[in-house]
Image 1 (cartoon, helix red, strand yellow):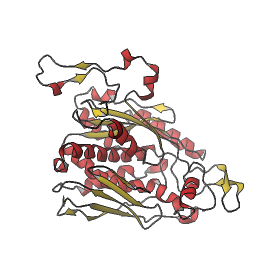
Image 2 (cartoon, helix red, strand yellow; image 1 turned 120 degrees about the vertical axis):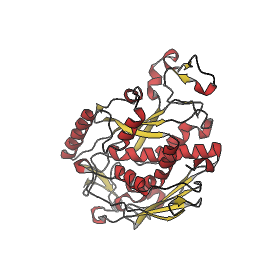
Image 3 (cartoon, rainbow, N blue to C red; image 1 turned 90 degrees about the horizontal axis):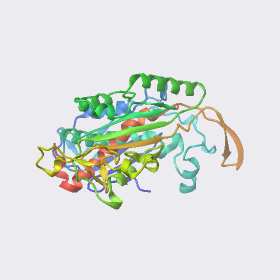
Image 4 (tube, rainbow, N blue to C red; image 1 turned 60 degrees about the vertical axis):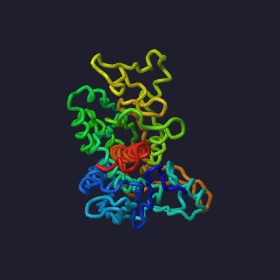
Length: 372
């Protein structure tokens, strides 16, 4: 089992949904970076459940930094963070009944029944709180370099939000992206957001759940960051984002639309102002490739979409297998579960993406470059 990811930087996560605590260790961060704990709290709040569209399991997420930070700044040694699990209810779970859509059977096959099955154990989305806590430090580093990462709910329950192009055409687009990051339900068009939430509540009333698509932008990253082939920006962002439970697909730029258009429509033509005198002033007339060519950033905003499946824990009666008796049986899942998790995963995608970009910057310039 590998719970560590990264090259110049490393992120290790640990813990289970109903264990004493979850946590993360961030290794390789430069010394001297100022840590804003209020910022970490704010990012954790964006991942936390809220209102009727989320689970009623509310955790305070009172994190503790155990090492790697002294007098408010990083020391250059591993940064260890833990978050206690306080609001667990293990009686709602039964080991012998495999929950449809969950990792129960695959985990049993790999760990021979020794895995912690309560609340999904290490496969639970609960563990992503540790990712957010640690990677919020990476977000702070990028903000100091005017690199903004933001996501919005592009689609949920068949309702489609406006896209980032409507923001990028405005002079104050950076401020708008930050406003988006501070929304609990992150949509560009609030009216569409209200309709999405109504559909989520409708699914909840039917003992069901919904999924959707997130669209993420990485704005302000210079050209020339990344690697070709195996460690391309697409490769490592995908690797990281697929570590988030419920993610089932990812596409960059025009994505699957490339299969339906011609090269003359797909190509992004380079442009430059007549007054320009440096090669790094080259831009592109379009951004179908999502800011990446050959695995390397081209200076345009990096854009990618992430598909989030419907929450598998639903209260409807479903068929399953009892692993003790090896008989088919009915299952009605009880407990506290989300009718949708897309609005919570948004922050996890932002945070893990920030880690990947910081890792790329450290690879190119050295870890001391990350110091704000």
